[in-house]
Image (cartoon, rainbow, N blue to C red):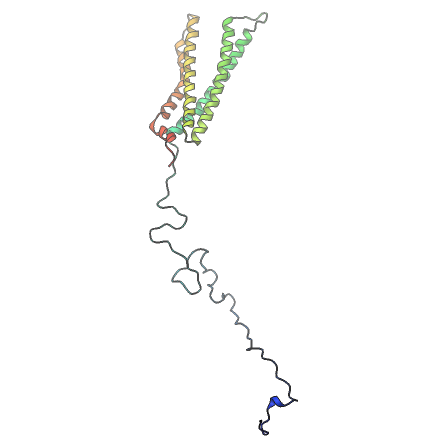
Amino acid sequence: MSDPRHPDPWSDPDRPAPPPYAGPPRTAPPQQPWGQPPPGQQPWGQQQPWGQPPYGPPQWGQPQYAQPPWGQPPYGQPWGPPRPVERTPGQVIGAAVLAFVQGLVVLIASLYVWFFASIADIASSGRPGVYTSATARQLATEGTVLAVLQLASVVLLVIGGIVALNRRTRAAYRLLAGAHVVQVVLALYWGGRMLDLLGGLGGSDGEGSLAAFALFFAVAPAVSLGLLLSATSRRWFTAPPA
């Protein structure tokens, strides 16, 4: 029972009901000064790169990065110092360069042989008023065949030099060595053929010098074969790459 001197406000029908409870008063968040980062972040320009642990002791709220134990390389790096890059030996480079030089010389000589073979073929064509000879016809045919063979040997020299500089295989070694062996055989054939032709003419002088000039084409292939037969060259093509 209520006291008549202090009436209960809730029992007064004319008093309006109080508003519902809306929670504690809301306040605006504190404004950060211009240029200052939010709490928990480092200022601009002092942030660590992505994936790199921060300097100093770890702080609350920062991610931890596992450091490799002492003596172990970081992730993605091999053990020990980097391996030196193996370079092509000078003997192999020299043999390949001599193959290119020999190819150029033989190409020029083949064009000359083809030219003279064409002249001999015209002379032995059997036309009226043109001198014909069985020897001229034979020389024309032989010169044409030799010119074609020498042009094919030029292609073999170029391919062998390129392959030897780019591949360390037994096939590359045999290809370059075989190209030089073909050049030695051709030079020896030309030397013997010059001696045979000039000796059969009788009374001709200088057949020895012409035969020696033909053997001049065997100098570069012989030097190249000596370089390829060295232990360094054979090891380069036979041993697996490190």
